[in-house]
Image (cartoon, rainbow, N blue to C red; front, side, top):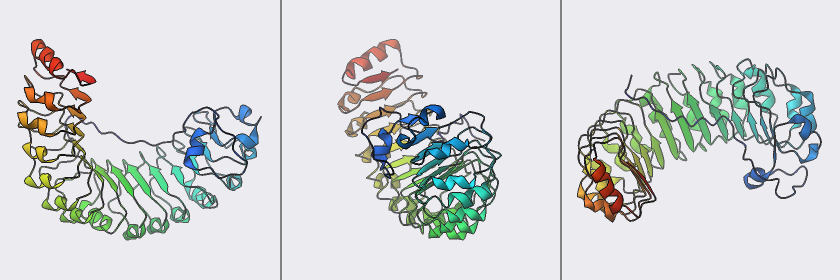
Length: 390
């Protein structure tokens, strides 16, 4: 479908932060994110049961479990629990004993009955994050709407064909993520998710892009949007209504041009257009003056897009896997640049002016046609740069 298919799926299956036991924590306390990050993680249930009141994080991944061990329910202060990669078939009623459970990982439990599961999980008053990736889910049941306090729902690598209107009842949802789904449209009720800040949809080639942007325009708090490999050829005009976007990722599509409405995204700091069919950038890109990170890898640029020089706040610029033969001397106008990546192009030299990029910490010019002598010259010019790849 596209060349050099590279797409970074932010697969947040589940992560516990491993650290020293740190400070003593009072029992029954609902921990904030900082305290929870400092709490010890247990991978061994037997060891955890020796100090049941002190266990806040338990990871029982990849143990071939067919049911939740009943001993787990003795750990009444659990706040992060992970069952990644098991064979669970149900979530029993006892799960409701975990009144302080904030994060639950159930990824890669493909036999789990999620209709019953959602109903029971709705009785966990403090559940904020739910990870359900790699579960062969084809339809989200209406019971999903009962998780009214959930803030993050991650459903990467499922085959979801239908989203129920009850999705709109999850009023506190802040992050919603899908990949390899097959649904055509979001339900109209998605506009009720007024607290949604981040939406990720990857590898859904059936998605109606125009309808999607029209609905997303009604989400005032949306800050991060990723729509990668969903067959976009042109951005609809309604993208201009997403004025609060800070991060926009549109990698692995078929985009050949950018609509003028993109100019309305005055708050945009990160723009990823990697793996599209861009040969040039339009003038309107100059208006994205808040932009700090720009990714244009795997496109068809044969000339450096000079419009970039107007983006004075850029700290990261990546143009790997293009057809560039020349880097203009004006590159030194990007004085805030910290990372410059130009690998897999057709560059034979870099201009002396690159030495003016005094804030540059990393430069990559590997896999070009630069001679060894030129590499030595560049290294000398860029002696201040901490990481050089060439």
